[in-house]
Length: 240
Length: 240
Image 1 (cartoon, each protein chain N blue to C red):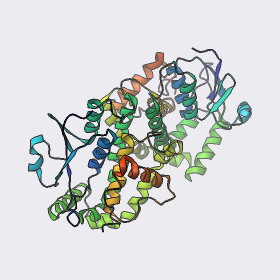
Image 2: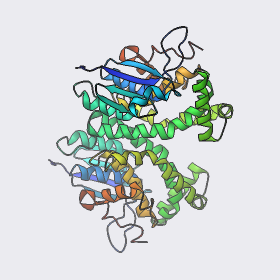
Image 3: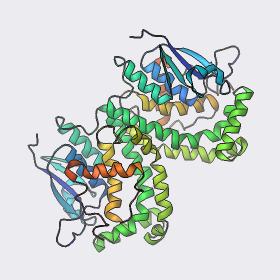
Image 4: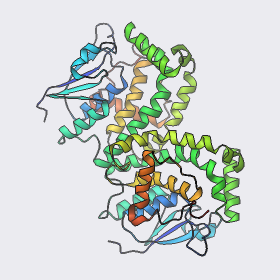
């Protein structure tokens, strides 16, 4: 059972009409679902990309960061491992050692082969939802990494999204065998891919996959999971 | 314990100097390692690509096919699932339901995103080791699939191999955490990737990865695993 106070430092975007901060970070969504999966309540502290002072206590420069009692854990995969090890009596995130190792591999696949294809084409839309200093920071960062402006990357969006959908082909094979990537129930590998879909959902009004794609029904299931945690975040289509 | 006779129908290539048939099939190597992992002895029946009559009993046109008592199982992943379910007391191939689901996803990734990059550039060399009718069959099949001749594909080999190594980037991340993709011990996901490396090893004398690549040490470990089953197959470098 939960005996400690959990605090999640995560990227926060400007709220809509006085609501709570918006959650735009891919990696933050992995941790949010992992915490919900473990049935753990947590306090969220919204941090701006450009506000390094807010997380100076951690010695880190990037969120998400989880404070769990005296422990300060950073990197979304390490946070998932911490939760699995610190709360073994709660529902498992990995389903054992092999599942943990393969979730780590899947996590690396998503970070290194999916994100570089998906994010650049949507980043212009994403920055429009952020504070201007965060937007300027991300614009400069992506331009350094790709050698192209956000506007150029945005113009190449159709090809990028088509390539992203092709890359997901192996995931569709997995979904023929069960409702989730991890089998009969969602586990951390599902949270990882969900984080990309959710980032797109809060960034752009256009659906990432057509309704007849098996990934569309999978994403809907995960939006409804955990008492609708994912669905409770306003979509770009609802809050343009 | 093993009480039934297991027979593996698998692609066999012409032997060297009166030795046993050579094993060139990617998918056959997955099943060979899975059987060894389960500690199961089996009889191998070498089948040529062009000899459909030899496997007509199964209703299938492609090997590997496993006959286990009265059961006839085809498709390498389904064979692995059969072995896991029929021999639960032997070492696990999946490490539980989550591990099975993620191994299925990894298997699909290897088949759909690794094989189409790796195999075409090495197929000319591969066909030189096969009987002429099998070689002609594979040549025609790949030319239909790619629209290019084996010679053209062979000329593009350097770029294809470089792309293959880049695609393996997430696997290297996994290998930072443990000696095998599946963690502390090899499991079916390791067998899947091994099958590609072993196919290259028996096909071409050039090493697939440089010695300093973490995948080189990983492949060596798997060649030595299961009493050296993989190592016992002559490499192209030894039998040109």
